[in-house]
Length: 131
Image: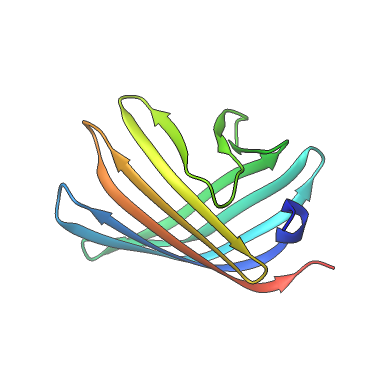
């Protein structure tokens, strides 16, 4: 599927496992992917619950020219669904896999290093698709 086929609204569910703290958290919300002049804007919003406390959550990325970029244009990882990618973040390392189907996107990230030891599993289910 080409990135343009992702345009629409998605239900977002993410499980966060902090292995260092033996703690679990969840993110629930929506992802809206829409065209932007240079590619696609990927906007996540919802609620993050960890240790019994909930707080609002937002995150924005850009998907352009074969790259997932942070909202300020810095590269996050190449957009290569089905292939492992690595993103160094300070002394920590994010190793991830993105799996894309017409009605579902799944991501898996293992984060390791001196500051973090986490696993993030995200399931996105299509709510509506742009035509």
